[in-house]
Length: 64
Image (tube, rainbow, N blue to C red):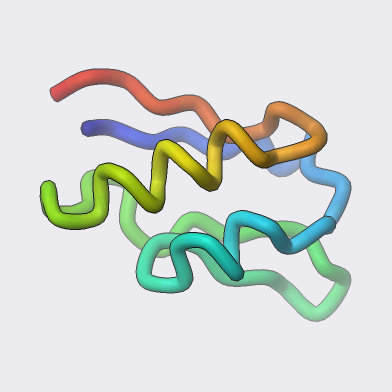
């Protein structure tokens, strides 16, 4: 899968970091940072969960 993160939409809730910490982190101001735009397949489920739970809909997941 390919992931994009719109930092302008991010509200800093941190749900992505809690759900998929191998793929997302947060800056000091709380805005999410994408650590791996093409994570390994074993992270598909947590990444999709993170995208679904994002209150700002700032995470986009595209199929491989």
